[in-house]
Length: 115
Image (tube, rainbow, N blue to C red; front, side, top):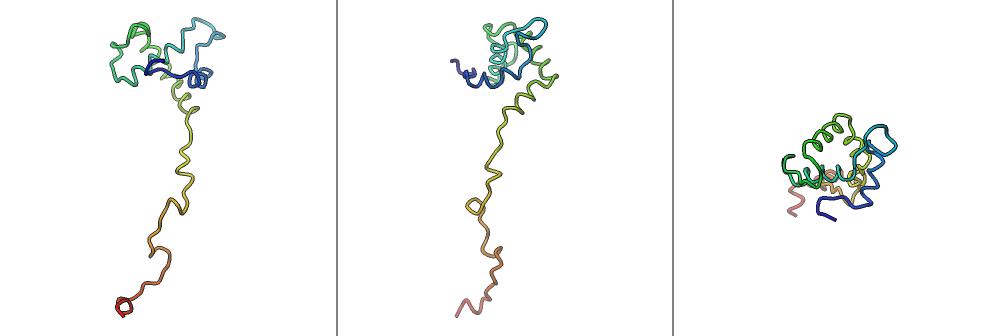
């Protein structure tokens, strides 16, 4: 597996969410290779023109990426794969510490403390 590619378990999670499957009408392209191309661009930070040839023509990949963006495909994928941040839901006394004066303890006057 190359550095910027998805593992098989990751791919199987997103594959059903993508358009262009074999059952769709019209021409279908290799979604797996296309997603790897997009990940390569996103993770490397390179411009589209520097996309390696193994992913196909850079302009075709860019046009398809742009089309999917406008249709909301990427948003759907991210929303489906998003996992809640449970740290925010599990706030209890072991996580949040209160100052001693916030608990309603009566303030001891300075005179009594000195004695």
